[in-house]
Length: 311
Image (cartoon, rainbow, N blue to C red; front, side, top):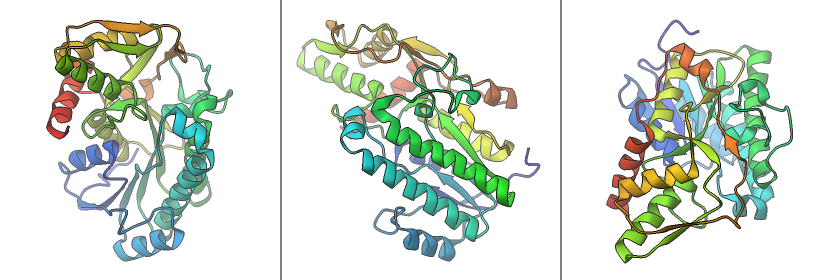
């Protein structure tokens, strides 16, 4: 484990600072004694090797958080597999190589729980990586993220650099995506419940409501990633999760309580449920001394307040 605070007085670059996780990292790092560097897409195209090399050469960060990625739902992944594979690989290759060239002291790569096999044993341990087939609907994104983990490990193995990887579970929070065509389950439920409350109508949830899923508030994820930057220096990636899962039915109940929706909810069991359970083993992170601060109801309450302010 690192013995010094790598963030103290450091220039820290957050790639993807406008995304939900990147913005949460900005909030978290504002509490540290460091100089936060960001770059809008108009200033820096992370898919351009030359642009990234020039930007790193000019700004020379000490620490890099790679939170940038091309993300999307099942339909987008299935329709544009080349885009998801190619763009994410470019972002990873360009950013990590440029960081190495300018002597970045610490790099933290953020992945996703989708890197694990579709039928991995529950809760999912870090060792489950590459032990089985991926979920076909997002395998292109997953393969790109696995490549990012392996790229960090390769640089560490060949050059001895301090590059680590963190794998968050399903995240939600301030700045989430509420487009019903591409959003994840919590923002979709918040929007549906709110609109049904305003309109005085019922709303529908796909599936039986029985599958179990794990969720983590984005600011908790950011605190975990910053914690790892300060306290972890290992070859293996680390799971970042709440360690608790709930049924979709229970999740719907919590969202409706927060929103104040009291109408009818219909579960359409003819629609697919997906994997019966998806829970990550977060014991490696917890044993280092990190704990989440927000329970699910509190986090959803904060996300809903942010939704009301911006929609």
